[in-house]
Amino acid sequence: MSKTHILIAVVIVLSASGAIAGIIQPAILSVDADNSAMRAGGPGFAFGVNGALVAGGQFALDPSSGSAALQSRGVLIGQAAGAIGLGGISGADQHVDVGGGQLQLVGYPLTATDASPDTAQAQGLNVNARQTALTIGGIGGAGGLQGALVGQKQVAVTPDGFSSQSELVGVGQAAVVASGPGSIAVVNQSVKVKTLQFQLND
Image (spheres, rainbow, N blue to C red):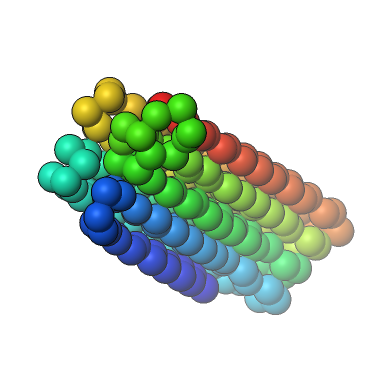
């Protein structure tokens, strides 16, 4: 059984009123992927493949403040699980979830030091992956292979300068188990990654 949920919410707001003008760009990224292969009882075989590819970007230009902002994000997830056996239970279960957020405030006077256009950029990622492969009793085996590659980038330009930041996270897991009658074999794997970046260009 395989299941993938993808949600991307992207909003671009460009405001210009009087002496205050600039760019506000928020973005939210959420991807969940689940894949499992399981068999039990008599002779049998199960195999499942699952994947997701997500990419998005934003660009805004504000001539009144002489500012431009660009941010982008991408996710690639691949999962494969299989089980084979005679009697007993064998199977593999996989899960990957990715959460990310980006925010740009470009062209606004963000500090009290001067009234020139400033830049504030923040972004973060949360990547979790877990995998289990097991055999209980019977004669059989199970295995799983999964990986995820996640990246984000922000670029901002104002009359005062240039700002850029990026992040890239990659995780991978592989597991194989085999057993004979009356035996148990289990592999459990887990990876958790959190990142956070912030820039202020005054």
